[in-house]
Length: 258
Length: 350
Image (tube, rainbow over all chains, first blue to last red; front, side):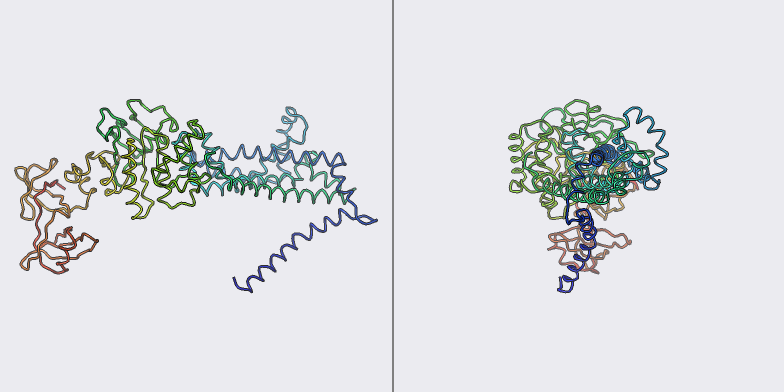
């Protein structure tokens, strides 16, 4: 690499770094500012404000449930379609991408009748939003998983596993899943990010999730609202780093004769 | 137990048929393999050989017919319970596992202890000469090494039948020959009944105890390599196994006259009259002769041997094969006389 190219690269890195980090710095600055100097009151409110705390807990749980639901629904389906029902591939892709084209408002209106049954059977918990969120994250998760599945010779790997004595379930769990793990991690992260940022459906359905609470707080307590927003972003970043690290460690420590 | 000497059959394929829509990939294939024997299913692409192998492995279903191992019908036995080791055409090692873990995978599926798995896997890697690569991942191995590991993995489970689905086709020529010999050596050592699928006649003839030639879903001939080469039962076998010249011949009383030479005919030949004889390039004799009626069209040097194209007086072009030391005396345009060695030939009506 020439000296000029190296300097161009550095300048671009710094430029993009400032572009992304400056808003975060501004948020941190605003959330810790007071008339008497610096304060961490807004950050303390994240734990002490009961409504906000409940909203954070609900959103985190929703993210976990959504990711679990999405992976349980999508991974076996996509594997099965690739191995045994290739004719259905376009159909599954179409259905998975469909939520992108439907406005959140239409989804809420459309699901109202269905949710009468959901709330009747499961109660009025915000966690019931997980059913909708599994549908909402399908387009993003599908793309991540599809790319991962395309990168491996799924048919040969499963057939090799089966010829060695593995049943379908074992072959999927012990051979396919480890080889599409990066795609699953990406799908999980994107889904988490979507759930933590989803406002419209939760708000229109009357549930108090983190984004809804942040908007509410913004009307009365700006610094706490910004602190919650920044915490969500930092949480997402930490989650991404942790999952990325986990994936790398899984690969490097795959042991002999497990 | 030496190969192929035991009584009974290790693998029986009876009247196997596989229909896809309007096409019959397999059309009543019947083949019986003795314990410890290595049989090669040989045929061109699309002849149904891989379909047959996949049905034997339980990875595909037959429309009709049966597959039995040691007399037990496997119709309702899923692939994971058939106890068959398989080496695939595509590289099939599990990328997330080390070489040792790959070889031990089948034993893990059988609930063997960790120590036993490790010992057996190490033993198998020793057998294929890759013990030093036990801790590497598949992506760190060459294609030939990956197929040797796949062979070790398939043998580690002590399969009742070993299935090899064109395991050498993705490799370059030099590695292919090395691994071909390795497969023969390992199979001889272990003594596992083996079914090899290949479209490469040289590979089939080099490693198999018997070769089963297939065409359009049917078996054309099953015979030992030398017998198959010398006595092809059908024109297809004669054409597919070896490069053949088609020479007009006249048959009478069990002998054919071609290129002015009388030779015996093989079973399956026409009894009387005119036909076309299949003559192998190495059966043709070419002698430099200024008064000869044939002309050398070209000489292709292939190392130890050369192929010489000759045009006869009537315009027919034949290919002769001879040692390069003899071919060196020939050049395009030379006049020659062409004869045929007194081996048996197949004469058919085209």
